[in-house]
Amino acid sequence: MSSPFDEWFGKRRRSWFPDVDDMMKEMERMMQEAFKNLEQQVPKNLVRERKLEDGSTVREMGPIVYGYSVKIGPDGKPEVRKFGNIDTMPHLLGGGLSVKEEREPLVDVIKGSEDVRVVAEVPGVNKEDLRVSADEGAVTIESATGSPRYYKKINLPDAVDPKTAKSTYKNGILEVSIKLKKKGDGGVSIKIE
Image 1 (tube, rainbow, N blue to C red):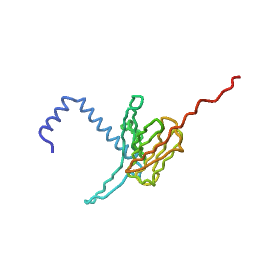
Image 2 (cartoon, rainbow, N blue to C red; image 1 turned 90 degrees about the vertical axis):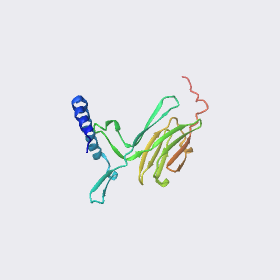
Image 3 (cartoon, rainbow, N blue to C red; image 1 turned 180 degrees about the vertical axis):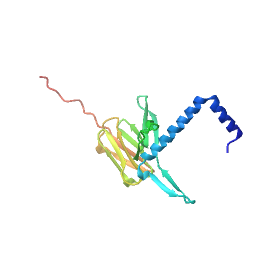
Image 4 (cartoon, helix red, strand yellow; image 1 turned 45 degrees about the vertical axis):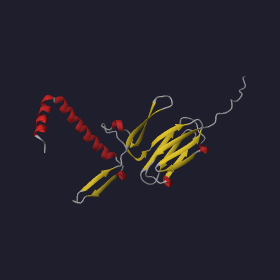
């Protein structure tokens, strides 16, 4: 039930600000379209139905996670990293949204003088379900089984020696430490022809 003030203001808003009212209607239409598109893009294992006490059925989607982390890099510029399981948020209203089964964990890369540490938040996963691999330029984190599922390939700031990698997992936080690859003592002599 609306109050007399709401009714009066609603009438005045339409007559005083017709452009704003049209804009609001268009935004509402766009949001309804976006949610309709979202429902079609959600993977089947993220959709559940349950019965309420009154006998009606409710469809629930999720978890759907999306966010950014921002930190200042060593060069003084901000580094923006996304996390979650939504692939392209800027296209939400245009219908280009894609929800993945795997989430991208929130990750931080910390470069020290002798090593690189990768810290990832992967809550709700057993240690046995996590798979971590590394090469000279990247670390890959995934949980292929269990729920929630995570996947992310993290490019490292410098070359590392993957044979020196060590990792720990406690309370949903995975930490991987890898020694930096040592630079050679000088170069190779090149014969001039």
